Every structure is written in C-alpha cells, then in structure tokens.
Length: 392
Image 1: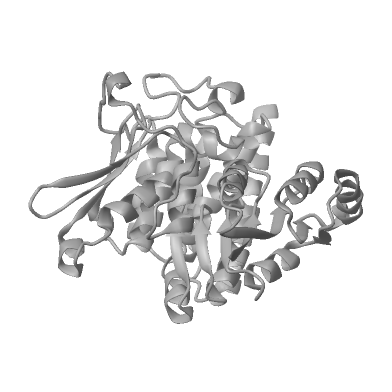
Image 2 (image 1 turned 180 degrees about the vertical axis):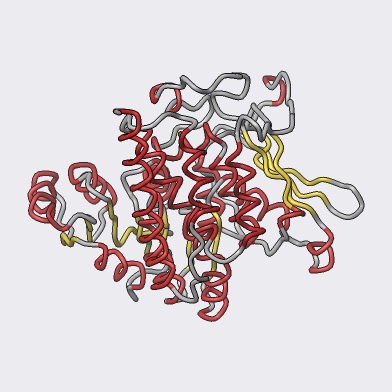
C-alpha cells in the first residue's frame, strides 16, 4: 500500500488523480489533499478519498476549512499555509507526491518532495521551467523518482523507455501541439477571455487554457523537455497536431519515429505514472481507429504565436531568463483574464520582460523564488503602466 499526497486536489489533474486512485483501494491510499482557496471542494475531496490531512494554502481560510470538513463528514486534520503544504510534500507518511498546483506556487513543494526523495508525479511544469538543472540535480542527489504527468512529457518518457544512452544522445524529441482554439484565426487582436478559455480538446483550468491559446504552454513544455530528458533545445521540435491523438514522439538516428497515442484524457498519464513499470487501467475508453478519420500535422506559426519562440530564446539566453519569462506570462495571463490587457499584450509583456530584466543566475530554491518575486513585481508594474496609458 502506497501513501499519496495530492497537491492541488481540486484542479483538473487532482480530480483525475483521485478518480484513478479510487480504482485501486488495495494499492493506494490518500494521506493528504491540498488546495489554494476552494475550501468546499477540498473538504469534499478529503471526505471522498478518506484523506487524513487537508491543507488550504490561504491561511485565512483555516476556520472555513474546518467547518466544511465537519459539514462534509470528514475526519481529516485541517492545516493552512504554504509551509504546511511543503511539510506534507516532505512528510515521512507520504510515498508518492502528485504535484498538480498551478503556476509558480507549486515550485517550493516540488523541491521539498524532491529533497525528501519522494516518487514525484509532476504536473507543475513551472517547477522544471524555473528550477531547471537545480531541480534535476536535487532529484539525482536525493534518489527521488520523477514521473512527468503532462501528456506530452509522459509520452516522451514512454517513447524513450528501453533506449540506450547512445540512442538517446542521437534522438530528437517531437512535441505535439493541438494548436489551441485560434489555430486558423489570423487576427488575434480582438480575442475575448471567453474564447481563450475554451480549449477544443482538453478540459483544463483557465490559466493553462489561455497558455494553450497563446502556445506559451508548448513553449514552457519545450523548456521542460530540455531539463527532464537532458536534450539540447535544437533537438526539440514542435509540430501542430489538431486531433491530440498522438501525444508526442521521439525520432531516432535511423529515422524511425516512435509515437505514443491515446485518448486526450489525463487519467491515462496519471495511471501510467502511478503504476510504472506496470500499466494500470485508467478507466479511459481506448482509441478506436475505425473512428479516427484523419491525423494531420503542420508547423506552428511563430508570427501569430511568438511566445513559443520566446521559450527557445529563453533557453539560449540561459541564466534566469526562463524564470522571468514564466513570471511575466503568469502576470500577463491573469491581467488578460481580468480584462486589464488584450490577448496579444501577453506576448508583448513577455518580450519586454525577458529582454529588459536579466537578474543574476539563481543557485538554489530561495534565489529562484526571489527572482520570480522580483520579476512578478516588475511585470505587474508594466501592466499598471500599460493600463494608465490606455486610460489617458
């Protein structure tokens, strides 16, 4: 019996994780669930999973969480604050940590789980984007096991299983990308929040869905793939595949391409990561090739979606560029969702920040978080200044 902590239990990844885990009551048990501010959903998740601990990130919501847990009939202990989440990630009571917190808020707990040598199922791409080599070195030193949960990186992992070191060194990664809701839309200047938060294939939170619409999500995945698999950026290619049936591919030196295919359902990658090297049934209906009419591919348009190109630029710049790019994007997406800036202004902010703010290269978690904090402050100032110009 393996004990699991689900960090970000009320989001799409968290819900899918709970669904998969519930299918194997004799194999997995949930020790802890966490959420940012959704106390009612967190309490229900704690009740349904039988979790012993429930943690809400917002300290001011501790009393509300306690009340909701009682109302839901859960006996879970209520805790609050980011420090409590970090402690859960490193707890000796936990064997597996599912890192599903959205954005840079999940970086610290990812590092704590890595330092503690946990089996880490990571859906928080910002941890790898910002942590880079520091995170990978931490995992290596502690003996932690990292399983990528993102469909693309999980697919790459599967395509690389069994490959020799020589074969890996000569291979290329091909990341697939749905193209988002605006793949065929030429003018993006008047995109609305409602349009940008509706993905044609995947059901995700608002932030990630907007990232998919700008292709920044794929840019972050390029950075992530560089560190997860130790591939140089020039060996990582992105191809638009609107059907989202092929989740990613690896091309070997002999020209042969191995692809991983499946329904666009995150339960598949979660089940694979939980059971590896065994394959667990995720409760997902398998592909029916007689119903798949076409599989198409095209190159991404970097003029309409420049943020994908910025990710490659960040890797070339090195240092703290990826941290700055990620922070600027998070601030920009939030400002767009709030109606403060336009859709294409997110890219403008990312470009201005990445080339206008170049802090020292961080060497540890504390410096990563401090750089992220400084970048966010500057990005927020840009947004406020931009809004002032519009008003005047």
